[in-house]
Image (cartoon, rainbow, N blue to C red; front, side):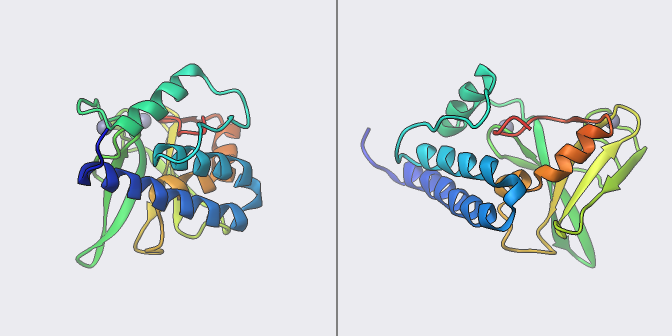
Length: 185
Ligand SMILES: [Zn+2]
Ligand SMILES: [Zn+2]
């Protein structure tokens, strides 16, 4: 395939998140294995090296998903994976990001994206000052929100994987992730 602008923009995105994942792997030993894998997947998606071996068996749909994301398929049903908070006026605005194409859309901060309930609570951990985990008491789903106002260095899909200890905590409380990330959590 001839090289072109579209391809290099996509590759740059994958390189950036690979670099961020490798930096976070040094910072968060508990999430290191998942971050190193995610970095290698992102480098493969950028066009370098082979698809890495996953640290734990991943369902075949994840491998399909990595390829789908790499190819940036035009039609997408936009399943929310994570939330991003950005400064807006005196406050912060929430966007949800698609797990497959990374498209973002704005969403109320007081609702569950899975069922629309307003019975939501939040969890956090000292080690992740820019991450909040939003839990729904109605449908028992959860997802992570990355606060770019608190840390502008954040690359949402990499920092979401670094927050793996919050996944372990939420799963342990009986919640289910709204949509699993690329390392299967
Ligand atoms: Zn999408
Ligand atoms: Zn819900």
